[in-house]
Every structure is written in structure tokens, then in C-alpha cells.
Image (cartoon, rainbow, N blue to C red; front, side, top):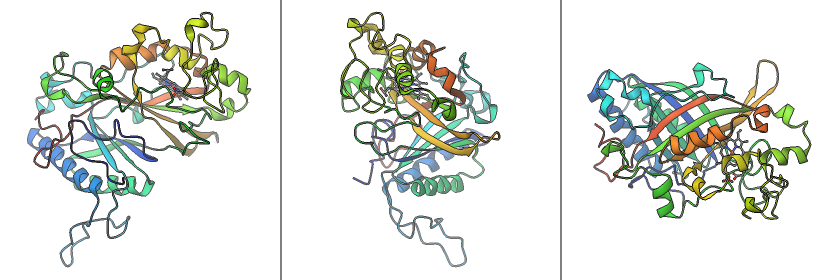
Length: 366
Ligand code: HEM
């Protein structure tokens, strides 16, 4: 269906099956006080409610600028648009009197050993993740929201992304040529999602955060010229899966489960392969699983003439430290680090959902 429902206990764009196009935009909030911040959240709610449903923009008065950019024609299609609003740790500094309400794990993004952070591409008070089937739908929504929130927030950085259709089937491929997303937890299993994705009552988080989720965004450049000079066999040993089928190296089909217990020395699936480090699949690792919802990006060229492309790694989890940080630490120094370079992104907290027409984003926060 072209419309993804906007209202619910959780925001859309988290468990929503990936749309083809996305824009991840981090903003600095410039609202002067608490009431202006509440106004910003009200406007975001109202615009996303309209844009995700689609329909006819309001007519403009004679001599007034049009109420809509017109980029999508006179009737705005829903096109499976979702807008997911998350907040950064910096929103909880002294500016708005929210310091006692910061989600417990939320902080400025850690710098891991293989990272090369570039300040212009990091952090932000607010992350807006827009996803839709077509790039012009995403762009139209971003432009509409920028227009309506002028003076209340301004863009800090933005990265657009795309997901390819399955080729030839199964999960879509990232720009290293491998299927990506295979081992994600099952989004249809709501009890599993309650254990892995959503903040639950009684978890030591502030009450307002229940129903929200920690969002990690990482901008990771891929050194594709270098990668393309590596044999397929070596590439597969770095990932732990076959490139064509996406099957684990000890299996034959994409969704076959690897049997690490039968391969304790890593003769078939190397112990330092990305997949095996990320999730060694002992019973204890079940609680560290996270939901990846990444997008490929292509930014043209670097100043040295190399292709500038990579992955907007994005994942959601109930507990930033138990899940993302644990997994990222296990990946330190993995063989794939020679071919990728994380340089941007941030830690955010996706707000709980908007319950109905009278509710707005962050209503339990302020
Ligand atoms: C699995 C690629 C970064 C966590 C995979 C797979 C591929 C892949 C091809 C196997 C298929 C699948 O299950 O989706 C990449 C690339 C990256 C990257 C190219 C960077 C450019 C990361 C990061 C994390 C991560 C930063 C988290 C810190 C995982 C996890 C799995 C996985 C948890 C599933 C492991 C399992 O349960 O078997 N990745 N990944 N990846 N990746 Fe990554």
C-alpha cells in the first residue's frame, strides 16, 4: 500500500520494510526556548502527518507564494513516505531545561579505533530520517519541512541514500556487492521487537522514552577501487558469506543459519569474518542483536578523483551500549576495516510514536 500509517505507539520508518530512497538530515535546533521547541515538534508532527498521507496542499491566497513547492505536481502522493524524528544528546544540555530527561545511554557518538571523524559530518540536535519509494518524494518532504521550520532549526549535515531492488532475489546489495540485511531480527515478531528494539517500562529510562528506540547513524566510506582489486574468495572470507547467493560459507542458501559450533576453529567461516565477529551466535549474543536499516550512498568524487561512495549504516536498538556499542567493539580491527572508513554520523533517540490526531511528537517529553 502507498500509505504507511503515521499514528501508532512507535514511529514509522523503524520496522517499516525499507523504501528505495532516503535522506538522513541532522539539524541544529535554534528554537530560543522551551515553548519554541514544543512549537517545532508540533510543526514536524503536522507536516509529517500531511506528507505521509499525501493529498492536495492548501490553496494559496492571491499574490501569495504557493503553499507547496509543486515538485510532485498538484496532488502530493504518499509513496510510502515515512519521517522518523530522533533527538541527539545535545538537545538535553541546559538550553531547554531537559537535562534530567536525557535517555540514559544517549551521548555524543563514541570514537572507535578505526574511525576518522569529520566534525562537519557528525552529531546534531535532531535527526530526521525521511524514506520513500522515489527520491523526489523524499526531497519534496525535506523541502516542505525546511520551509515550515525556518528559524527553529537549521541543517547541519545531510546524506541521501538508496536501496537497490533484490538482484536476483532476497536481500538488496550494498556497494561492496554483498547482500545486506540477511541476518536482521524478524520485524514481524512483535515480542522480539519488544525485547530488542523498543524502550520498555521499568528499564531505568525516563518514562517519556517508553516506545522510543536508540538510533545509530554512521557514515562509512567504502574504498571501492581498493576492494575491487581483491579476489572474490578473499572478499567472501572477510564477510563470511558467498557474494552471489549471500549464503553463509558453510551453507548453500541466503537464509541458511551458519553452524559455528561445528566450525570452532573457523576453517569454513573465519573467526574474524564480519558476520561472525558481529554475532558469534552463542546464547548470550541474542541480547546484542540490532535492527540494521542502512542505505547505500553515492556522492560523486573525492578531491583525489576516487569514487565517493559508501553506506549510511543505520540501526535501531533498545539499549545503545548492550547492542550497537558491544557489536562495534567486537568489529574493531576486522579485516574489512582496510576497505572502509567511518567518518560521520551520530547517536540519536527516536521519539515514541504519535498516538492520534490530537497528539504530537515528544508530547510526553515537553
Ligand atoms: C552483517 C556488511 C558495517 C553489524 C553484515 C553482512 C554484510 C555486512 C554483507 C552479512 C549479511 C547480513 O546479515 O546482513 C557491512 C558493511 C559495513 C557494515 C559493508 C560497512 C560499510 C556494520 C556495522 C555494524 C554491523 C558498523 C555494527 C556495529 C552487522 C551485524 C550483522 C552484519 C550485527 C549480522 C550478523 C549476524 O547476525 O549474522 N554486514 N556491514 N555492520 N553486520 Fe555489517
